[in-house]
Image (cartoon, rainbow, N blue to C red; front, side, top):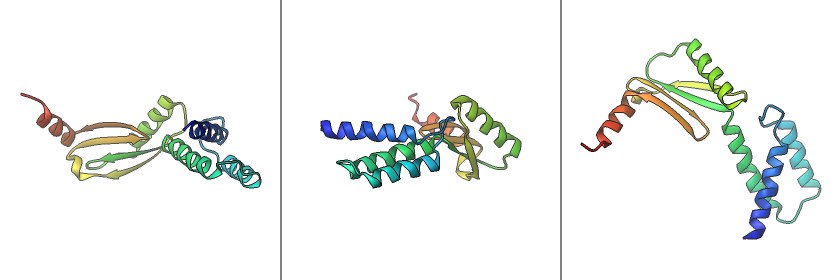
Length: 132
């Protein structure tokens, strides 16, 4: 168990090395880390790579948000959401948007493990789960 903690800590440091000064994953840095591990593989390299992959996936998730909306959504609104998220998390956040008629009306924004939702379907769901 102690060995796994050490490997996780090592992997997390490798993931931190893989970020640029803005805190985003840098492909060249990832390649360099992987090349170093390939040239001189440490003991437990498979576990290290598994943990490293998970940390990098978490970091990538922090830089891409999805916007789901019912009906049309203006490009300026998407831009404002992107700007707001980038400012809030102090990093460049890219967004993609898609229509989701299940929301009935409203919007849902997901970034990593953060979800912001203001939709009719969510309001109805909350209403049904309230105790009367």
